[in-house]
Length: 554
Image 1 (cartoon, one colour):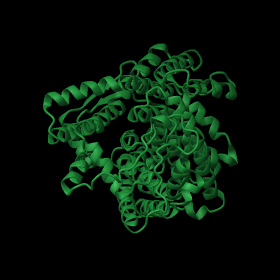
Image 2 (cartoon, rainbow, N blue to C red; image 1 turned 45 degrees about the vertical axis):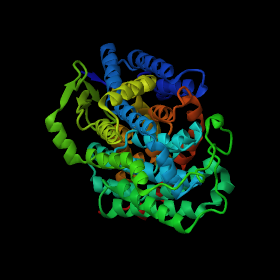
Image 3 (cartoon, helix red, strand yellow; image 1 turned 60 degrees about the horizontal axis):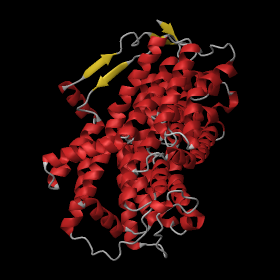
């Protein structure tokens, strides 16, 4: 048995700096733009192993096994999702259906700002609610690049838009994970998150359009942005507080899409914005495809349904695959749980992260039938067959997709290896304890702890599992509401999603902009910091100025 140690250098500052080295190495190398993402990830993984073994005293065999577990987990399920989303996208492009989809969206609006609202925010929120784990950025990034947006606009804005829905993603998985480690009622936690994020569901659509088109460009379409934000925020609040935390994103996104489409039937901006590149500096502007769809003939009803068919299939499949009952049934058919020898339950989390020594599990659950990526693959194959592809042609296209995605899959696996190792070695808990030592400022910094957790692990669920109990213990010691701070971990975490290395690689892959992960990271970084700080300020107001908003209703 090995017990984690959170202050191995007997100096909290030095121990915190040591714990931060792998994450800092990764981010600096990627942001420099001089090191390819997969090389940066491998270097950061080596640094993480060295720090875990030589500073945090983790046995070397445990460190290596934790890294290997992360590599495999990186491909199943995250890489598996990305691979099959890109496969579906390539099939629709090859068959000509994607060009029809472009024309269908152009039939709703040719204005690029409004297309961002419809695709990146509302449509992306649906996929976040149905499946999460990289799916929304992969799909919306691929659609936006197909519509002619510049790669930086398509990738960066998809990442920024995929924030407010994240805490309720994958049918409420982050809330369930938070409940499992804190012992708090998931309905109560969901309700609290539902009193924090609707404010940002109003802000984010304005933020996305402003980042794309500038202040004047944003204000020219403010009625549509307001309709999009309000029609998402109100259902998000109502469903999370009075129904359940599982269907929040699906309900809110469908209502938001419907309201925006209906509103655009009676209102259009005076000037149509056709530029597909960011208004400010856009290194990828030359790769954008400016133009108009106005000269194309209107789609027939048959063409419209043909264009929408693959995406309707994806929606249906994702709803099924995201359902807990289906997952349970699928896992009874095939489940292989591999408990990693000499690692599983042989590492103890200890106080003050947990009240009593708690073994850390290290199990690779190969539940391939219930993996979201498997559902995506099924949707792609069925769509391909319905579009007239032969089995041989489908297999050949899958081979080409594998070739295109190979480097990205290696990168994602290395990223997950870093996240798994930092969790099992206690590096991330050391960083968390540094945030927890901020006293009266804890509501602000505790929220940023959730942001840090997602930036490190790539998952709001993982961040909640990692820091949820620490939030509960610390808030109780400081006389704050444990429900408020546990929920703040999830709400703050959503703003870290855009800078986690996995999401950036997913975005670069979806937009065919390989090797430019550093540019994407530099673009979204300050958006992430500012939005996370705003969430922290809002939670601080809840804690000290408007405590009635933090009262438990259930």
